[in-house]
Image (cartoon, rainbow, N blue to C red; front, side, top):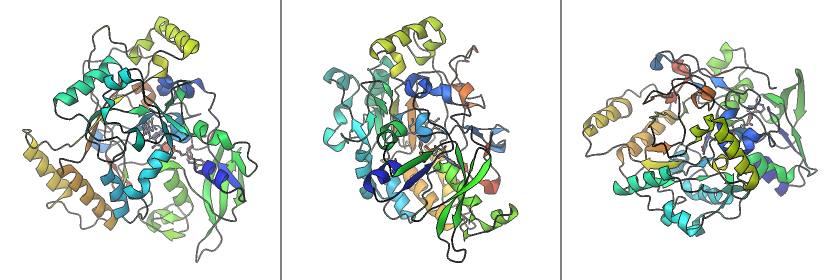
Length: 456
Ligand SMILES: Cc1cc2nc3c(=O)[nH]c(=O)nc-3n(C[C@H](O)[C@H](O)[C@H](O)COP(=O)(O)OP(=O)(O)OC[C@H]3O[C@@H](n4cnc5c(N)ncnc54)[C@H](O)[C@@H]3O)c2cc1C
């Protein structure tokens, strides 16, 4: 996206885009929405990271899928366009990130998307009364659309409505509380994934001021002046050979939450102690690089459905897939084009619940008065303060609930197996799984090990 915007806005600049993976625009697993999980674990498109065994999870290793290729993780993600909160953005700014507050960021939430309102009947079934079309972006490159209403969506919305938690505000308001139907990044005309390589890069690929190199592993940023460092280029590996390229203006890193800190550290930007231990000369000391990653903590419960409710699991039946494929090819209808999800943003703290006082005790123990934060870096203390504030505010969302219309075998270490459609295993009635919450190498909780360190 950034390369596209730069290419268009600055014809006077020569832009070079380096990407570790390839071009997957024609891969049916990328194009056809319901095939999303087929990419997970395939190292040609997924970095396939996994953690070291987690002592807090009885030694379990955690799989971390990350997209590799033009479009990054938008090639392999679930396509749910979940909406951020005002409080979350404002907290980024409070941490010292000027320009990342809600008021500055909100226009970009509109700029990237074209929101497609479904017909009146579908909008009614999907409970879209809260949507204010004026507040949604309607001319951006990424398509945001809804699937045909499914009985599970309707049941979900009815349940939250009965609990007094129907979402009232528009999804772009930054004040999202309650159950609702999310849009998916799917083009409603072609029913294909609207990922960032298709939505952005495709339209500038023939412009003469852009060059794109794929299957290139960026090793490190080079610096012109070690005493007052200024990025002067990049060292990268292509076909097993090292190359360098110089930059006269800027080097911009967009390697994702795992890739960018790794490149920074290899370049000498990070915690001196760690860099020294790896034989890397420190260019800029910064103890926060590569630390304190916050991942989703996810618990899943599977429910058995009535026989007449179709889910993605039906695709275990070859006859069903054949029929679904025929429908998709004929007029893009049917289940292959619509793996949608219902979401809810809710406060975790329910004052009336029997566990409310225990919850407060846990907050105090880990985030509050009785916790020891004396050795924490300032940024981490500010982050904990924010987490505590949100957890204690019943008008802010601190938990995200969602339904996905397929079985999840979260006891599997590999994501591809966890959501595999071709598994013949019988699912136990209720499956519970979890992913590690705060990840910090200080406690050697999590060391990311790519299965293969060189790109294909
Ligand atoms: C399985 C999965 C499901 C998800 N589902 C959803 C969802 O439903 N809704 C949602 O909102 N979000 C979802 N996400 C998250 C979302 O996709 C990411 O937040 C988003 O794509 C991050 O964008 P990014 O540009 O920061 O990083 P990425 O999209 O990860 O892009 C980083 C790019 O940098 C490249 N790169 C990294 N290191 C190097 C290197 N050394 N040299 C060259 N290139 C390099 C990578 O190959 C990649 O192309 C999901 C993510 C995954 C993995």
